[in-house]
Image (cartoon, rainbow, N blue to C red; front, side):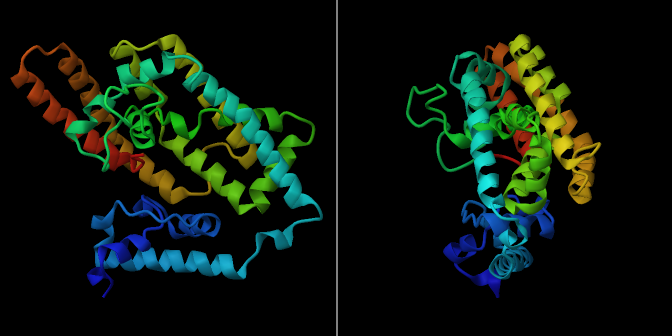
Amino acid sequence: MLANISEREVASVHVMHDQRSRDSQDICRVVRTELLILGEDRDTLALEEMAERSLELMLSGVLLHRFEDWRNGLGPGEEARFREVMDRLAAEALPRYRALVYGSADLFKLFLETTPVRELADVRFGSRPAYRGPGQETMEGIRAIPWVFGWTQTRLMLPGWLGVGTALEAVGGEPGGLELLRRMAHAWPFFDDLLAKVEMVCAKADLAIARMYVRELGGDLALFDQLEDEFRRTIAALLRIRESDYLMRDNPMLQTAIGLRNPYVDPLSLLQVTLLQRKREASGDAATEAVSAGLASTINGIAQGLRNTG
């Protein structure tokens, strides 16, 4: 059976790292646009039922990709126009992202002050250290996984939406721009999936919890206000394009799952902030060790609850 295949073979059917939190329609849509081969969650796929389910979803997505061509429903020149708009969106989003992330040291300082990124070594997430080299505690030195993971822990989910609102607002505010974005979301699986991913990240974010981290851990609240403005801009643009009153309208299963998980994740966030405060104020090794153990538990719990670990 599938449970007895080798680790390499198991890894080959791992299409998405968070497959348990997605329904089949979402995974099929993803596989139609991107076949991601990942291999760091072998424990999940070593379960026979999970391996069979993952293989089933991968094959169904591949077959849909093989026998359906989204371009068949397009008018003359539409595909080229869609790709031009994507280039324009990227040109609008990238400067906004780089200005905040690389343009000054303020955001990385906020990251270090208000996230448990320094505590990741106690949890052993991932196979590599947080930074590319010793003594490289900088934006240029940090690896992608801890960068995403840290913002996820504080419930801000920043790398998943920063710059998106600016780009969608710029294009959608032009004459005919909003209608074109809606047409792209309806006709182009890639763009529809991109919006769905951003929508999911925004739905899992909690700006009240994120603000608490910044306030209680001494972060820059003025900078956080700027980030919150971009977050609100992103949600407003998504809802206009989707013609919806709320996020995740087309994915009620995930919407329900988020609603069920949050009451359990919220207390872990409160506990994590308290423990981070205590660790930074602690003077003895014994006290620090006990607090670190508690922090490791909150980090694991929040990661399991949000299902987006980086």
